[in-house]
Length: 410
Image (tube, rainbow, N blue to C red; front, side, top):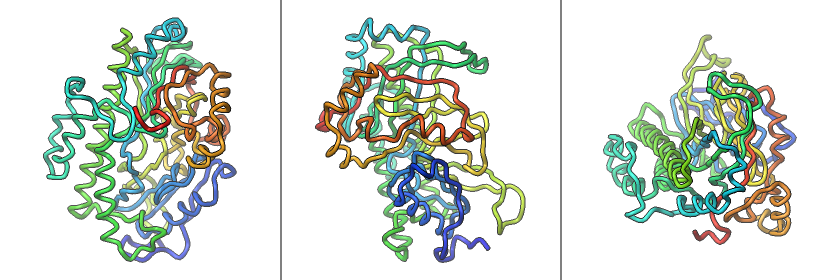
């Protein structure tokens, strides 16, 4: 019998499907087990890029009933990928490497707390969104949004030029098979999302002080409460801000080179969606609305387009979801870490990293050793492990990669 959301933790976790189990460490499995013991949990799945996170593991997908879990959404709310394609050949990057490099260095800002100077800021309709005025708290975040619109975070966030190869004609996208110049970015809702996550996670934990410390980060907010509705509004606003953030980044960088995209695609993770799924055992049969949290997992409903990147030196992929219910219509959001940041920084040398990049024709602007390709699982193995989740449409090969500097200064 499935317990109500007002019951105690289950003695045993609900079963959940796993892809790429051989790539997933026991601690990430334990985190997912903990999530499946929550009284609000209904179903879950673990993607092949899964590794340890806070609360829900990165690569974890969790469906719950009438509630939302701020830490299962994550700190960087609505972190996303955006891919823009251009008619020009990627050969142009090497022909005008100085111009492409200058565009990335001058038209992006990277790092925690980084923002544009007043004279460098741009306007965007998202800054006039009425939800900024829905609560005093969101009003207090508006200035942060104004200052950080069009910037990127630290860690694994990037903006990179590269070559995109489409394997077959895609009439629905208006594209013929072949190779295109491409711009790919990974970033999220910056300080706005961080403040929302921190504030409402604390509220959720205060409401569930009975939870053991090992599971406290999975404290939830009922969507039937005022605080739950507040978070839902704030989360969705952060999602719109993150989308605008990428739009501005792509506009600034491409404009500096004089390029106009023929197509832009995007998807996000670190979010919660209201979706309908077949009712699990213990409920009346038929479809049921649930709240699906994808912590570092890509939406992969039937026909849904997604972008799954590798590392700074490895390819990424444009995919089309196959809509597998057992995965909760999800796929991985990347290769996933094989080493912690500390382990990578202590074991991978700069020479090893740079040789890896040089062999693949990648020029790196910034980027710490904690983000070296060797710190990640092989993307080809991760993609092979989720063949039943997505179809591959094309491959992106990075050539000029911009990340935060190693020292954390930009």
